[in-house]
Image (cartoon, rainbow, N blue to C red; front, side):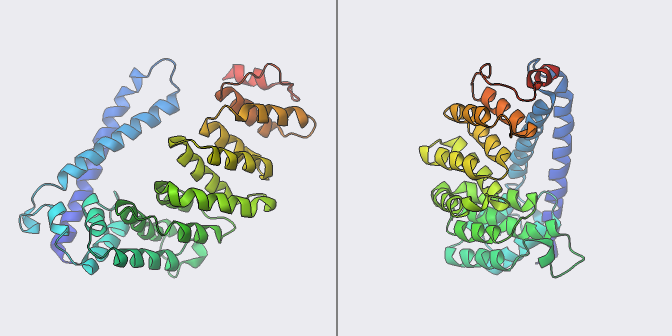
Length: 318
C-alpha cells in the first residue's frame, strides 16, 4: 500500500474525528431543550445518535471529493480501480489504524468486486482464523478488541455485498465458546441481524438445541439478536422463540427484557401467571424486571401480589 493512500485515509480519519467532536459539542448544547417528559439518559443517547448520523453523512461527502494524492480521483472512484489484494490490504489497514473504522468507499469497492466468491472465501478464512477470545491471540502485545476489528470489517463488506451465506458459520463459531465478550457479541450481531432469512431459522434451531441446558452464555446473546430482528418485523415464530426461552432460561431476566423489548402484549398473561405461581420462590430482581415488563407492555399490575411489598414504593421514588 503506497504512502499516498495512507495519507488520504489518515487525513480522512482525522477530519471525521473533528466533525464528530464538533457535532457532539453542538448537540450537547441542546440538552437544555430536552422535552419535560424525556429521560436525561435517553435524550442524551438520542442526541449522540443524531451526531453520529450527521458525522457519517459528512464523511461520505468527503469520500466524493477529488484528491491530488489519488491522481485527482475521489476515494469512491479510486478504490474501484484497485485489485482485490490491494483492497484487502487497505481494509486491514483501516480496521487496525483508523479510529473511525473503514470508510464506505473501501467497503463498497470490495463489496462490488466481480469475483464475489473470492470475497466470501476471504471473509470465511478470517472467521475461521481470527481470535474470538483473548486466549486465542497469537501476539500478547495486541489488544483483543483491536485485532477483532479485522473481522468486524469483513462483516461490513458482507453486509454491503448482501451476502448472508456465512451467518451459520459465524453463529457456530460464536456458539463454540461458553461465553465471549460483549464486544464480540455486538460485532457479530450487526451481521447476523442484517440477514433475518438466514439467521432466524438458525437461531431458532440453536435455542431449541440448547434449551435443556438453560440457554446460558452465547444463547443469551442470540436471544437479543432475534429480538432486534423481530422488532423490525414481528412474527409468531419469533414470539414463540422468546416464549420458549422464558420457559427454559436459567437466567430468566434476559428473556423478560427481550419480551418487553419485542413489545408483544401477548406476553402479559404469561408473565403475570408466572409471578402468581412463584410467589414464594421468585427473586426480587426477576420480580422487578417482570413487573416493569408488564407495565411497558401495557398490562395492569393491580391484580398482582407483591411478595416483597415494595415495588410500588420503589417506582414512586424514581
